[in-house]
Length: 493
Image (tube, rainbow, N blue to C red):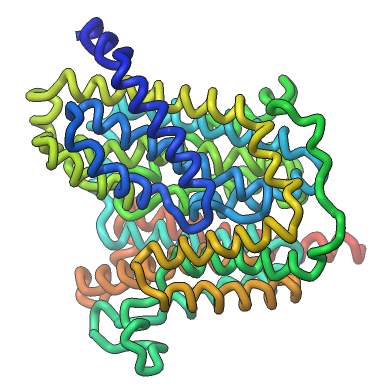
């Protein structure tokens, strides 16, 4: 079996599919609004004429490359290419502003590959066990996880906790727009049929980060404040940096894998969770947000860790872990590969080839990422009078392409204006994104839990997993406030 798998994965057609998939994923992921899910959907028709394992390799390569690609523009121009790179902005862009773009990209690339490798190891050795754990997550546990994620707002609020909480509250309000799935009542739709389905997340994300950044750049459009990248020819990451981020990459890779196996949770949630955990356990939490290696390594290792994690319930149970694997489920069925326990028996060679190909995809991503740093950093020195219009066009294209609806473009522009106003007022944008992601997840599962318990709130405290998450969330939410109070008392004394 081992020899057959090796021959399969090292064949020319498989290697070309992997390289092509990863390269396409990086390119698509780096474009604001063009998600890795969209890339997989675009490439899926091409797999019709391929052997099943070759076609799936193309999609896996795009999946791996797409998640990593979002960090490139997040680091270089403060615009996350994908939602899973939103947390990378917090420390990636400040490092670029200091003229350390090559270092930041190197850390991101190595952390992404390490997180992917860790999730690959867990995918191979403990997939059935982790999949059974995912089955224990019903509505109460999923609500508790979402509540824990929302509590992280206190850690990513920057210098002002109050402004961070206001941003988070604004995100929760935006998450309420649309039809209530339980009662059927409409909320904040103002009579618009378009708003009945709620605000599409990608246009809001693109507007908050990309369009608002364009509006800010217009203010100093003709000023010369570009970063000197003439001497950056490779990823400038030292052995000291690598040793510093190694524990972070391992912890975050494992965290991302576990969160990835939970259906509905994805790289965006795991990135923020890992960032928060690293900040809380750090000896210098005040440095997070100023451009430190751990602040890039944590979200990147975690969101790439979800790639292998999301494949675990897909292959073992036929349950997609996120939107990317939901599209892959269709591709598997198209090639007569029915996910589940029988897949590992009837198509053992194909499954093992996919496992081996996942490792090679992360290796290809590492090689392409490190060898193209010189090309990536050229984005920084593109004159703003050229870069801003290009990014704005990509914002429009990316927003429209989600649902082929021009109303999404309008939402994107409105979100961009809102982001511009908030940024000028010193309000952080990350809490809005986090609340917008987790708000519907928390509300829906909270109400389903109450239906399960016939209105009793005890369901959240009698189930061990849910109770643990809620306790951790409460500690996470109030710890910064208590810490600030003690610090003020100490200064007064």
